[in-house]
Image 1 (cartoon, rainbow, N blue to C red):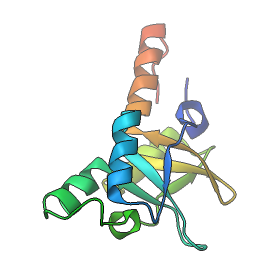
Image 2: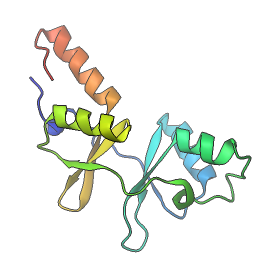
Image 3: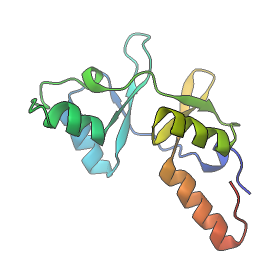
Length: 135
């Protein structure tokens, strides 16, 4: 039974510098077939996140040039983080409370992973297939 964040987290995090352009973020997302990027802090700032949704609504819908808009201008900060020992039930509650689809996993002050709805769903489907369902 998988009860903790460490059991489902993805450690393959794609990131982008805060001062990169949104166009660079789009390229990275399309190339990696991913829906979000961790935005690296600039000058002791907070980590952020940029999602496809941010790009669509904050840049494209407003007809802004993605080559001129910087990632930090549209990124959400700070990211919501949890420790790797956090129970999955707590993560789901946090996601619902903040209306978000992913939380980042931190160890001390470093981001070491991410957990998304899809990660939890995939893990639970595998558990079901093995006959040991349980969040």
